[in-house]
Length: 306
Image: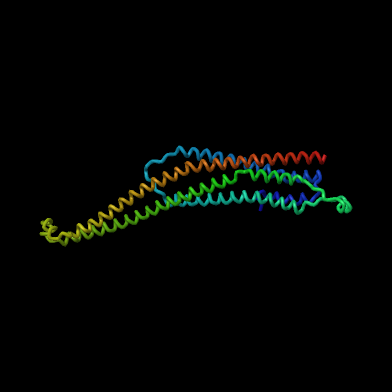
């Protein structure tokens, strides 16, 4: 299906008739609504992107505190969802640009195959070369194609792709943060488990000790330099130190991810919607000029038919 709805279904029907004044008016009546609708659409898109640009510009005023707010699973899923939406946006935009140009090229090909001059008689057909026809749609298609070629679609496509890359980078940073969080959780579980095991062991160990051992701890330590209590306590303390280091590293990474993410959005979002605003305005102006061409053809067709 073409990006212009059912417009293409009208063209062969109109062009299969002689291009008389009535035919011109009939064609203009059916096709003249298309530029109007495209102008309305791009006018809406331009207004929409302008509002988005303003919101994205206001984002620059947002500041974050040094509190390490970590990335939740829900937040990460929404970021992935945003990345997928941006990718779909990029694909749809690419299809829009390609299909518009392909549609015009298809109509050009149709004209070459089907636009046959109608001769007044067999004698004229044999003796005279075919007379070239220039129906209104031919000039319109040339103008339309020129306008499409001048649109800054490469800039818009590049801006969307760049923003998609930014979101993918944020997703990677969030995944690194969440992996470190999982590592901290595992270390914490291991620490709690070993600390509890040590406390249980220590309580039983102290109950088994003899009174002399309890009253003369210095001599007991000298006679048994490898005190099991010291060794086991050292293992627990080492694990606690590792947990503290991993927790501190996770908190630093949380702050870095937030700062990098917000910093990227502050730069890229305004740039994205600035480019899209310019593109939608260029489309608005292009279809506005196309509408003027159609209106001019309508006026000429009306004067010829009168």
